[in-house]
Length: 92
Image (cartoon, rainbow, N blue to C red; front, top):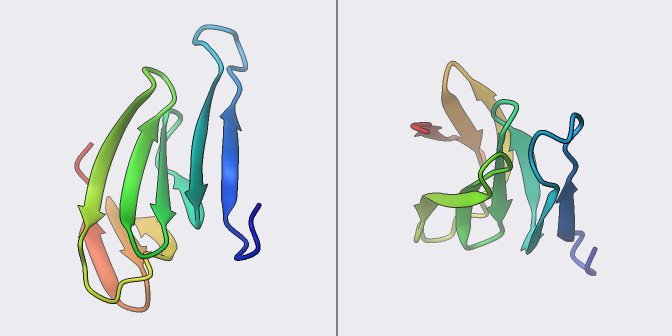
């Protein structure tokens, strides 16, 4: 964790050893599980991304929004809520 409270190293451990263990090495502000395999995380001032722990792939959900903090608030009905009043439709 750095001085701003961001986490650098997140590890994903396979419970049944069906998939390899992996790790996300990036300064993330916060994150939330979308389902059993997709971890949605934000990087302050940069964007919101998805890491799939099953196949170890990355996807960008949103970037380049002026003045956005990208603080994830929650997920409801396939919509990701972030910052104070922003909503993003999730298509994985």
